[in-house]
Image 1 (cartoon, rainbow, N blue to C red):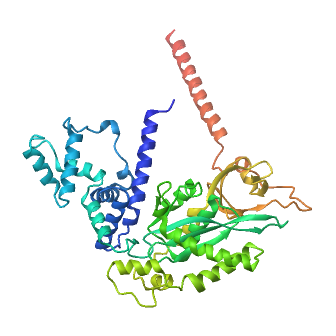
Image 2: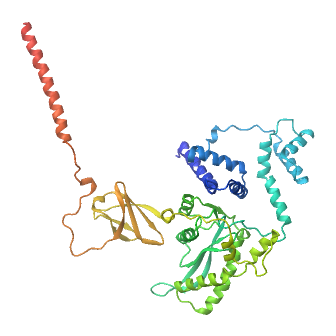
Image 3: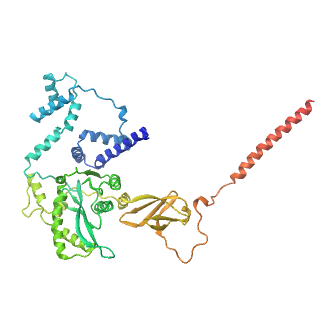
Length: 468
């Protein structure tokens, strides 16, 4: 049976992690307060929360670190007493908001009280505001609808680069890949900046497994720095625990699209039309290898897509009433002219965040097994369980970790003509230096106690003879 307390702790830890992912983009102490407020509003809107809630999470994290994000036990929460007709009151409040969107929550409560639907003082502003927000009738919700109606193009994108990226995979051509030249399906994995439509990384791979997606994210971050959030779908490649852990370590939020909501990924889907045009040209070129395909694709991006005026960028600025040059704005121009600075992370930190970690038992030959091959460690680790880490895109390089030993790279087993007849002993069998013999110390102490008892016995016997 599952331990209820353990289940509660697991729920608290997961909730704390989810909350941290929400506020991670806001935790930079050097961030301008105005920009932090703007980001807080954007994160709140995209996650159906109020900015006040995010501010409370930030305050708790600053005061108590990760522990401050852990929720209290549900059983300890006090339940709020609401009137029996509360659902009806919420429905009436929604209708009052529809009639006059500018009505405040306090005004709505006053109307309900004047109409005799609820006694004065029963409804609280915070309670009604929360329920209206959940129903999509918050002040900011309604403002978004107004802005959408007033926009001529209804094009939306983030106001600055690296605030949001979109990632997806698309089928590529079938190419003769491998030693035998067998034809194999290829896949294009891409990450595009939501604001500028600039490609942070886009390459063809021979599979579409999770390591391909992780490699795509890793290369984008190494080349252009950290982005605030990534918008992805719910494919198995994007829901891997490894990707989620890596993004959490780097303070990047992962936002998932709703199932069958292709329009929500409009930037990357529109870009795939460019890919289709390239694939049509590639068929004429009779490409024979994955390397050749990527070479042509890189040239196509840099010499055509990135420097060509983009219709979506034009419509975005047109909807804001901003002047757009007659020649248009290309993704490269929009990327380079953005004033938001790029935030680069140390290469070692990024690399470590994306490495896989596993446990292995060192056998009596001082070797470990990994993906059907054997790797040499060190003789002193025989019989020990060690931790290994590796890059899934370059699994031939394996690092070994064990407490008390400097991490080192494991080498593939290479049996030579001669072997050392006196190999290093395992740690469990190595002789440790000691200041004295614990065995002799123990028997000496016990012997002294025995002699003391004997002396006491002799003294007592002498006392008895003198008495007679």
